[in-house]
Amino acid sequence: MSDFWLNQALDDIVFDILSLTEDERNEVYYAVCELVKNRLEKARSV
Image 1 (tube, one colour):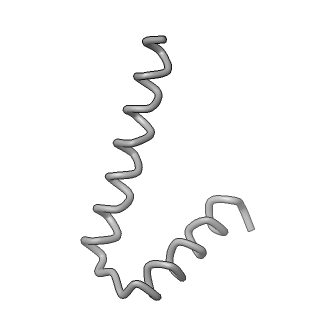
Image 2 (tube, rainbow, N blue to C red):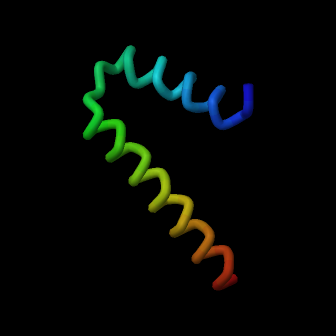
């Protein structure tokens, strides 16, 4: 099993425990991507 599928399985377990809908899960992924993007932009400006 690849790291991607292991991470996806762990995400699904946590999201299930939190009872997140599919839309809410997608919002979490989007927010994380935004945080990473902002962090990379900040790192480039230093």
